[in-house]
Each structure stands twice: as C-alpha cells, then as structure tokens.
Length: 459
Ligand SMILES: [Zn+2]
Image (cartoon, rainbow, N blue to C red; front, side, top):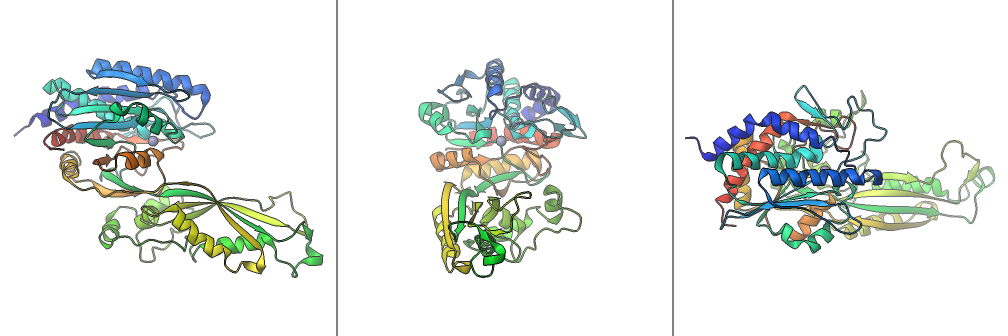
C-alpha cells in the first residue's frame, strides 16, 4: 500500500534536479564567516534563504540578529496542533578556500561522477537543503507538514558558533521544540547512515622545561647540565606509548559499544585513503581496540608547536629553556580537568635531569557523550530504514563541534538526532569538498519519512 509519505518521497525524488539546482545557487554565495570581507555574502545568503522559505510556505521567516554577530535564519510552520515540534538546525556559512588547490571553482558547484563538488556542498548546505526539499514535497502533496517545524540556520558555525548561546538566550522561542534534528554530521559510508552520539573535547596545554638563566656553550657544559630541549622531547615521549598514542587517561568504553564499533567501516583502507598515508606506512596497530574506538572514544595528544630552534637558527649551545604547545583530545564523558591532572602528574614526577617543568592548561572545551534512547530514535531508525535500507548506526566524532556541545548542554534532555550528508570522501574544510548525490537523495527521503514517524509520537 502506498502511504502519503511514500507519495511525498516520490515527489521529492521527481524534484531532485530542482533541489540540486537550488543548492547550487546557494553555493554561489561565498558566505565565508571567518573573513570579514565576506560578512555581506553571509548576510545576502541569509536574506535570500528567508525569501525562499517564505515562498516555500514557511511562516515567520526572518533573520535573527545580535550586535557583533552574523545573522541566523529562522522560520517555522506550526500548523499541526497536538503534534510534536521539530527543530531542524543547520549552518549556511562556509570555510575559506584560500590557498587550496581546487580542481573546479569552489563557489561554482559541479556534479562529477555522482558527486557535487563545491565549498559547503556537504558542510553544511546539503544538510539543511535536504530538509527544504522534504518540506516542499510534503506541502505539494499533502498541503501540510505532519509535524510542527522550526528551522534555525546559523551563520557562524565555521568560526565556532561564538554567539549561538547568546542567540539561544535572546530568541528562546526560535529554539522551542520537542525533538531536534541537527544536520552537519557524517555518515560512515555512502551506504550506511550515521547517528552522531559523541564528540571528543579539546584542551590546549603548554609544557615548559627550563634549567638555566642563559644559554651556555654546549662543548664546555654539555653532559654536566640538564638540557631543556632534550627533556622536553623526553617528556612528550613519556606521554605516549610505543605507537605514539597518548598512554595516560584512557577510559573504559562499555563492552557492548566497543564490540559494536568493530562493525563501523573504518578499516585500514579507509584510514589509509582518508589520511593520505604514504606507500609503506601503515595505520597504527589496533592493539585490542577498534579504530573507531581509538578515534572517537579515547584521548589523544598532538604537538602543535615547539620553541625548539628552527633551521637557520642553529648554534652550539644548550638552550636555557624549551616549551611545546600540546593539543589534547578529551574522551567523550571524560572531564578535561581530570585528564589534565593525570598528565600533569606524568610530566612533573621525576623530571629528566631535574629540569624545572611546568604544565599549564590554556583552554578547555567540553566533550559530549549522548545515549540515544526512546521513541524518537526508534522513529528515526524506521525512517532511515525506508530511505537507506538500514537503520542509523551510532558513530562518534573525534573532533569537537562547539554547536553540538552547546545544544547538548542546553537541550540534552530532548531527543537530539544528529546526522547529515557528509561521508568519508567529502573532504570538508579542504580542497574539492564534495557531497555524494545518492546520499543527498537518501537524506531527503529519510527526512520525508522522519517527519511522518515523529508525527505519530507523543513527545
Ligand atoms: Zn559544518
């Protein structure tokens, strides 16, 4: 039996080329939020979207504005009394393209071999345009949406959502909802839809070693005094295991999750291709944990910079001090300060050669761990089953997405459905960013069914 939702999905598929054309037009705006000269493009795109949403049949279409902030677009359609209110979040701003070797013009999207290439195609314009297409189809076929729907499209996500909390404070009604669909996340492959349930947090640390009041002659004093440069490297080495992974502060991951994560298609070939490993270099050995667990659920460390002398600045001297900036990814659910305390113990205990060591926490952003439970997620699984032929698979993100942490903190007791149109080949934030057009179509169809499934719930 063909349901209304099936007819709506069929209409959305018929209109797929028009939807891609709409997306392509939006992608012409160089709405780069980190470059002040493009602030007017962000605003122009926001205004364009407001107009289009009105034409689509949304009401109360407007830009939300705050001083010293780029605008958000908001709109709603609240004609389904007694039904849940769904908030769809996305962002319209883009990463810059400066100094990137693109094969095609980054702001002139082109479809090649089933992928749409253009800055913002997948991050995140395709994410929320997939909802516009679903809405359009519902209104065309059924004359109404099955749920109440709010749209919130941010203009500052790519600069870390510096004003999103202020927007939440200033316009609480624009965020009022029973369930939230946050686009801008990833699918583990073009065949498997992803539900993001965790993020790692991020800490910036400075590790400092010091042993003398001035640099001294390395021939005259070497072997008699502690060398801060060597001590710095020894201390960094202390933090990691034989593979170079952070060896301290690891967390217990629930056995059922750890087991399930072996199913995530993050095999050596995906790592090899995604990270562009050189011939002859292998991904790190799993050592009893899946790659997914290593990337999403365990802490990690990266050396961001050091004060070790660069080429051209050599001299035969033991330098009086040396320091390194470290970036530490905090495991989901782990507290930054707890991990920091562990690491501080490691580097301050018995410092090499007795150098003076300091470890300073420069900044810290929260991790996020979410347990998707309840009818909204069962509804989402049913919708994705219809569109993708399989339910959502729970995935994590190794990075930190400020807007997710903010929604998580503020609305963590609501069902938060995090998905999107990115896949491992998307290359977000880099050259030749692209979206798989098959994923885009499945996302649209999933949205069509998701509204219907959510409408049946008593949230
Ligand atoms: Zn994004």
